[in-house]
Image (cartoon, rainbow, N blue to C red; front, side, top):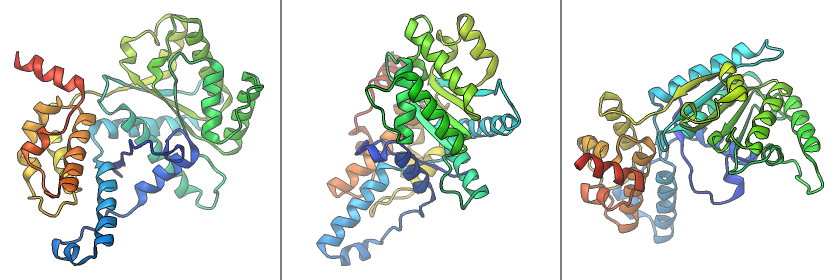
Length: 339
């Protein structure tokens, strides 16, 4: 399975997954060949300008360091692809998928990897049809309203969102474009921002349901601890629960899969003085430090690699890993473990 390039830079709107150009750039990045690493002698032979350019390329490479497809990602892709196939002949009541789990456990990674797999499959089946938009990816804003959700769809598709446009205008435009562009998979992230205990939340849930009835596509949601929240409560929640399958993300235990994950990330490093095996020898330390959270692990290794280039050390050490500030949650978990 293709590994997922992570890009958290947010440098410009065109690189955001919530826009069609950004999503397409993300898909194209997955097809790029791995960065060619120069030997130390080849690097030294470059003039200063070329060295700076090469270092910038390496910084970008490590900022988007690839993450190997984990068992969670594979399960999400398999389940999602199955639902897409089963939904092809469905006229109504299409089935969907919810990716749920604690924060920082790779929900967005799993969701976007599913989208990537679907898009690449669609491109292989329809190589000459550039007008197709196989995947739409949006996030649910905090305190969202139905119009805000319709506007998120519109922005992804590049449709104008005029102040005078009402929810009906936006909805019809989105449905028309998605139907014409043969959209087969719609990804909705941050679904935990919808609370069915509020009027707006209930209306947003109804809006997504309406989109799912009008657009012949499979819907996949991702959010924090959905099964333990209120999105599946009450009458509306019962309807969602009856139509959606769930897959869970979680912190990784210290096992063979964790070791393989660290080894794969190590294999993608492009540092002149790095000693192969350094990270794999520290895989237990990395597990303790990150709490088994894939998002924290990615930040840890990418941050240490960036520091190695900026400082000129060109290697990763335990001290270098400790110098990278991690998220507050991982520090809390380490304190709880030590008590």
